[in-house]
Length: 265
Length: 294
Image (cartoon, rainbow over all chains, first blue to last red):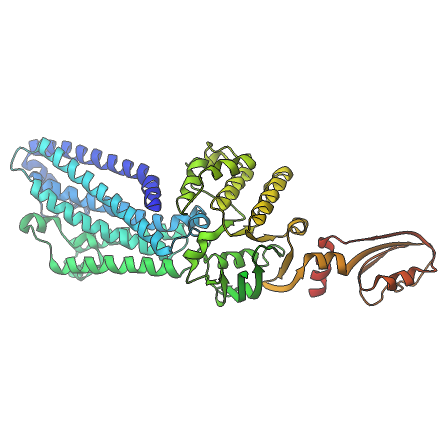
């Protein structure tokens, strides 16, 4: 309990900044939407003139961004990237920061098993990403309703947030695993950043060249496409299974390496 | 009973030498010195005992329990003061001490105040704002808070002014009187000399000697300084048992281990201007050790 409390405390400020940013982003986005909605079809025509590469980088694809669902689905891509950055960095840093801050000589000589320290840190990570997700959910529901003139889309938002949560879990687990395997926090953080960036680039590349869509397994951003969720309200079982395997494996790696490795400061 | 028992403990960092075949044991109630130059492997040994790092070979037991398997149980009764003390920033001294206390059962909360008073430590300052010496004090209070049965000190006095060092030594002696065993690592021999009963000497990762401090100092070596009033051979004093013989003009100085009458016989009948015989400091004894072993 004491380690969990400490971790929640030390991440509180960063969580508040992330939450504030998400709220602002969603507010600003929906404000922009109200502009699009007024301009009507001319906006779609404008975006259609963009080269496909640019369109897919912005996540535009086939969606009609003058409809609130279409707009929100495009928006959702940014949530995924931001939530991914938050989760993977949180996971990486929370595991390896004790050595960076040289507090390892305090924490790891306490009468607790290393596995308990890891559990507390993972639990703190889980609670942080849950708050991130709930804040995104609530802000979405509130601001979407504020500018939505048509059908309510709250159920779709809930479905999208659930897939967002799975993606957060995957990236947090990957981050923790990297933090446990690489014992230099700076290197761990850059590897995590590199992984996040490459998964994003792969997801954009797949949109551009359909031929490489076998790479889809490499990028969690593509596991639960917003357009599919909106259309069918279902999640692909095979990708759910893959997500589950990824999360469990990286958590296992985290425990295994933290148990076995030297704590150096 | 042995509180610490180390058996051929070996640690390599990749290919780099940490420690090789380190073995020694510390009796209950003892203050045990652990001496060696920087980089000799003192911290590596201590960090292995605390299961912060894992040995490549060999094993060690504390309180007759395996340091790896039972590490978390053993550490209930260990107070550790690392050579460099770092704490979570943004916390007040009192917060870190309470956080530390939360890991142990049956903590006497008054002890925080008592220890802080002895060490002259302001509990309500932020850790960030503390000087190196003050951080060290936090480390001392934190390490002794739970009345550990074994206190492990890694270069504890660096950063403390002499007055604080004395208070710190008094504190350690008091804990020792109350039953705590102490492992005291240092490269400063005089402080080990002051506190410890026995000492293990480590060099380049290996224990080169384990000595009883009193025996080492009192019974074995005498330091001679003889200002000769007549010329003698350069080798005149170089008899069995003499070490570090230095001749400076007419002054001969050396360490002598053996029957002192032998040396008196050498001087007898010679004309001398001055004669000083004293117990050597440990420093000098060890310098001799290191030179001999090198």
